[in-house]
Structures are given as C-alpha cells and as structure tokens.
Image (cartoon, rainbow, N blue to C red; front, side):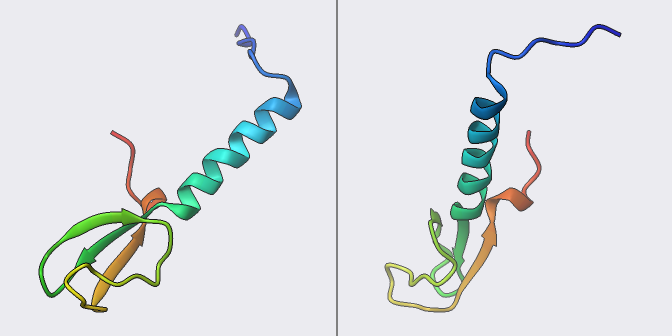
Length: 66
C-alpha cells in the first residue's frame, strides 16, 4: 500500500484540523418552532427574528456529509 503525501507540514495539518473542529463547534443549525424559519448561527442560545425563543438547535457536525 502506497502512503499518500501531504501538502501540509505536521503543524499546518494540525492547525487545519483544529480550524475544521472549530467550524463544526460554531456552526449551529437552528429551527424556530413558532414560524418554522431555519438558519445557521454561531451559538446554541439564539432568538428567532420573529421574536420566539422556542428554537431547536443542532450542531452541524451531527449531520452526515453528502
């Protein structure tokens, strides 16, 4: 089995992977139970533009890719 070469140094790869983890942690899918609006926010404690605080939040990392 041939090992693939990386275009990143070990430190660059670590930083890139950390950035991806941060994006996953800070991208929160939101759904307002009152008006049905959906959006992506950077926190779990959010209020909808309709004024409702009855908002369901799910971290985007929980959604499968593709």
